[in-house]
Amino acid sequence: MIELFDLHKSFGKQKVLDGLNLTIRGGMTTMIIGRSGGGKSVLLKHMIGLLRPDSGSVVVCGKDITRMNDRDLNEERKKFGMLFQEAALFDSMNVLENVAFPLREHTKKKDSEIRRIVRDRLYDVGLSGVEEKMPSELSGGMKKRVGLARALVMQPEIVLFDEPTTGLDPVMSEAIDRLISDTQRNFNLTCVVISHDLKSIFTVAHRIAMLYEGKIIAEGTPDELKQSDNDVVKQFLKGSLEGPISVM
Amino acid sequence: MIGSIFAVLDRTGRSVIHVLEELGGMLFLFVSIARWAVSPPFKIRQIMKQMEFVGVKSLFVVILTGLFTGMVSALQGYHGFKMFSAESLVGSTVALAMTRELGPVLTSLMVTARAGSAMAAELGTMKVTEQIDALYVMASNPVKHLIVPRVIAGVIMLPALTIVSDFVGIFGSYFVGVGLLDINKGMFIRNMTKFVDLGDIYNGLVKAAVFGLILSFIGCYKGFKTTGGAEGVGKATTEAVVISAITILICDYFLTALMF
Ligand SMILES: Nc1ncnc2c1ncn2[C@@H]1O[C@H](COP(=O)(O)OP(=O)(O)OP(=O)(O)O)[C@@H](O)[C@H]1O
Ligand SMILES: [Mg+2]
Image (cartoon, rainbow over all chains, first blue to last red; front, side):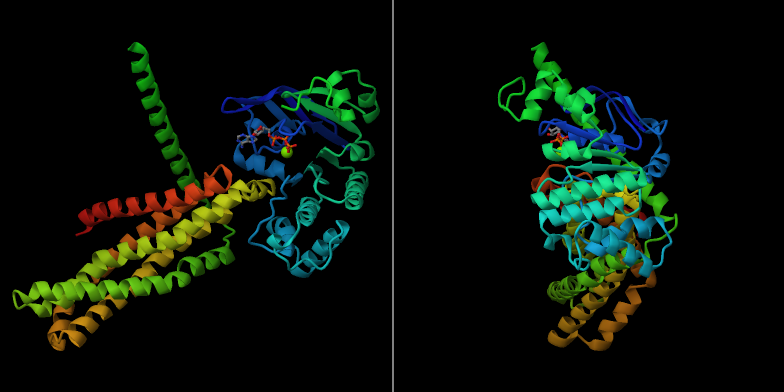
């Protein structure tokens, strides 16, 4: 579904992606793990053409989006939904208008119908009665859930989630994990989820890819990764200070 | 020795490239604004909102600026013309200065400070909090959504504000000249209508439209290019105001040279 070939990306002198290869399979949830600051968000932004690689290619449904013009890329993006790490809600609009935004932009639905859809999507993420609030009046976790509702409102084929459960309480995390895996299953979505939440790794993910030093060093099912004898993977999954990953 | 020459060349080369990149970026944005401005659907609600922000909300400062500029010009002019016993020329002089120069330029500078800066700050914040990326992701073009309404508002509202400024400036000069300094009312008005024609007003309004384009374009460009968090937003805002003000003053010279 999404294929990344030999991606290189640097910001100034800092190399973030260094010859990364990865295939995201269709109809599955792939989880990307890796250390903080390791380039996971950067990787996700390459998948939807927000960042262009210095070299390498990103192929979505057989089409190389790194060589597309803006108009074609725009069309391609209609297949996607994305939840940003900091939610990226429009702070000049209230919650209702935020979630309704893609509907108003790309559909001709009536206002009453849009309101109904928005209410349902907000209900799915455990929010009700917040339609009229502005993003600045929401907590971090609420923003994230509004962002999630907005990412799913157009029923996209591919959804990219940047840390959907970070900053939520354990119960809410569990609920969001369940929402993601239910939506994924019901609509046969292709999901890419970045997460630090080791518990959700094993409940949500069909496949896991570990990003380390600009490359994917391991990819497979959760069980395969648990059995992995790669030291980096072992240390990361254990959360131990001992091993090749150093904190400094 | 050789090393330091290379260092200098290297630095010069870099800054030339940087300037070229900046100009290229501006040109690119300008073309894409022009393209999106004429392609439907038009964001009428956004445009109205920006027109209110740029126009209606600037009304108060523009009136104050225009009024006191007209008043002080009348006062200064009176003392000058009195030496030649030509006090009755005060009205026409102030009216010419207001319609040709002071109206459009001062209005634009005030709106730059008020609205141009706000454009840079608002878009800059949207940029650093990834709201602009979010627009791209939702297959909506930020140029169309954010920049075109602001530029249209700038181009339309600056002439409108300038008319107000001209009017209250002339009123201010009348108030000071006729009301306080006892210049003959009939002469004051007759000279004014004799020396100021519609062409002066019209040219002033064309200037205002150009300045409106400049301040909204630069405000949006700087906002759009913002990087580096809150500090970056502050920097973008300052740069937007300074660059807009300078560009307006320089363009004013050339427009004047072309027009009059
Ligand atoms: N636009 C940018 N300009 C410059 N550097 C950037 C930019 N975006 C990311 N980086 C750098 O790239 C590196 C990877 O960032 P990224 O946000 O992808 O990390 P991450 O893996 O998502 O981390 P976290 O788990 O903390 O979110 C960081 O060191 C960051 O400083
Ligand atoms: Mg991240």
